[in-house]
Image (cartoon, rainbow, N blue to C red; front, side, top):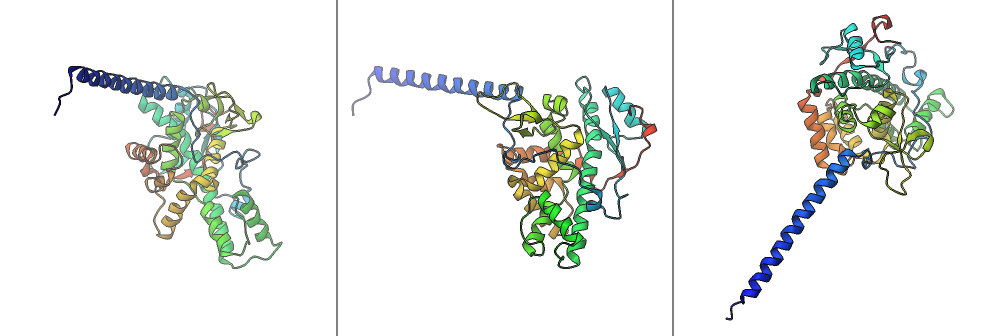
Length: 344
């Protein structure tokens, strides 16, 4: 058999050099692209975000007390709104109501309107203030959701509802709110409404908020109270991303306060098409008599991010590393506004 000449070996070596150089160039390009994406506020929207035709026409209002609590309107302590211009002010306000991290048994019913600058804090200080700021908001919205769910279950337990009755009007209001169609007395309607009117575990909500907002330091959180990178297609409801692609028409949603952002998050989980799998996991946990664990429900977040299972693993890791599962069972407790040093 004839042996290849020396020129053949030289051509192969040259080809290999070009392939290697191409691979190195591609790797550099990918690294740069990843770095640029991290520096940009033009990140892709979560796959689970409400689409253009799903977005509510207005801000999500608080559910009326006559729907959520009926005669039990004292079930949720009123949240005292707090505004702090600095991290030091916020820390002093929390200290005034003995609010430490992690909380031992109860959580003060305070609502911080917006994050003060947190950039100069240590990692532990920033984490502590971030979690203490958001936990009361998540607990409050969950309490509203749970009370509403219990009200629905009480009505369902009484059998069919009569047309034009107070109960029928209440159920229709909730059906419109949570986008459930059908006969109020059908099994399918009732099952779907209960699938959508339910809580989100605080540990999962806090982990996602920290992940999406850069621990409260992202531009969208600082300027728009937007914890979860929510988009809008209405100019009067958002701000323009600095690096929005040519021809893109989306805006980053502006929320009046942090609680509105948390409320939007719960609503998205409960009605967004991409979260149907998460609602299935939650429904099964209920059927099995298990508590709602963020570690478990996070398995339904695959469609929240294009990273899929990697995103799920990251959220679960944040829950574990920050001991967020220990927040289960915490309740809000009333506070006196006069004790909040930064209260305005």
